[in-house]
Length: 293
Image 1 (cartoon, rainbow, N blue to C red):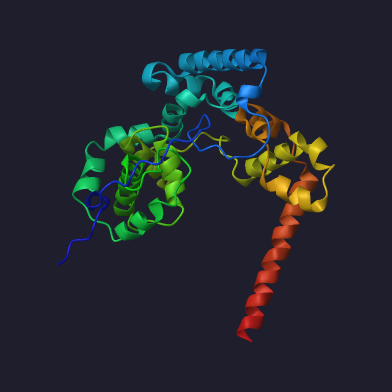
Image 2: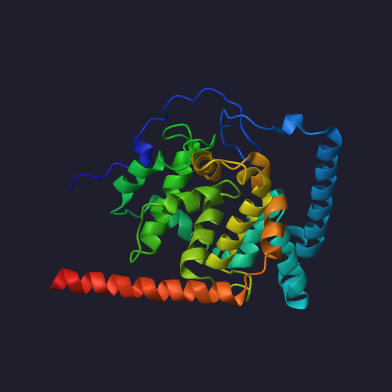
C-alpha cells in the first residue's frame, strides 16, 4: 500500500522578502491613513503605561504560570469577567485562553497523546490539510513560507485533531482557528485548546463569559458608532468601500471592546431578531415544499 505524503515530505520554499508588519505580524496594507508613527509621543507613552498596568493586574490575578487562576476565578468571578471584557493583555492571551477553556487540564491529563497523534497516526484528511494550509493567514509572517515552520506546525495540529476526533475530522476553515492559537502558544498547547473549544474540556466554560452572536453584533455597532461622523458624509458607493475597510485606529481592541460592551441591546431589537428568524424559517420551509411539488 502506497504511503500518503505528509508535509515532512516537502522541502520548505524560499523565505518571502521582508515587508513592513503590524504589531500582530501581518503585512501592512498599502493604504492611506494614520500610522502608529504619526501618533503624538504622549499618546504612545500613555498607551504603553496603561497596558503595563493591565499586565501587572493580570499577573497578580493569575499567579505564576496560572497557579492562582482557579482560586481567583471562584472568589471574584465578576472581576474576572470585567477584565476579560476590557481585553486580555496580548502577552498573556495564550496562557489565559488555556486557563479559561480548561485546555491546560486536558494537556496535563493526557501526557504524550499529542506526540502519538502527530508521529504515529495517519489521517484521511492529510492531503486536504496540505492543500488548504497555504490559504491560511497568507499575509502573516509566520505562515508565509511554503512548507516552512509555521505551516508545518499548523499541519501537525490539524492532522492531530482530525485523528483525535474522527467524527469531525478536518473541515475547511478550521485552520484559521488553529493558526490564531499557534500565534500565542506551542503546537501541543494549541492542539488541546482546539480540543477544548470544539469538544469541551474537563469543566464548562465560565457562565456568562461567552455571549455568541450578540457580542459580534455589538462589535459591529461599536464600529459604526466610532466611525459615524465620517460615514454619514459619504456617498453610497464610497460608503460600501468604507464599510469594508475600516481605519486602523477603529480596529484597536482596547477602544473597540469597551465601547461594544457598553452598548445595550434593547428588548425590541431582540424581538425583531426573533421575528426575522421566524419569517426566515417559514420562507425556507415554503421553498422546500415548492421544490418537492
